[in-house]
Length: 102
Image (tube, rainbow, N blue to C red; front, side):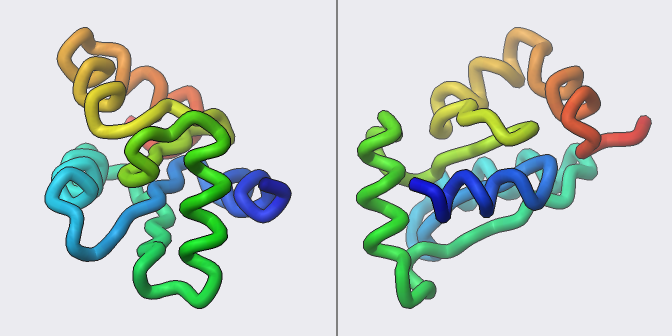
């Protein structure tokens, strides 16, 4: 978990993903279309990806990907991010985290 804590503090938006996951692709596209430049960690392409995936599950991410952190805090998966987007909370959250400047 210390590894995850360190990784999510390095950038305003961090996404843990798998290259074959369509929901991960959707969330990455959404955030990039807003102009956020997330750090994306493809767990299936990382040597310690399985270990990180298990840590995400222990944090409460179910399924483990996509797992989105904004401002160092766990936001959740695709359902949570889409809910924030639909209720108008996502862009203000990204601005507060320093991921958007407009």
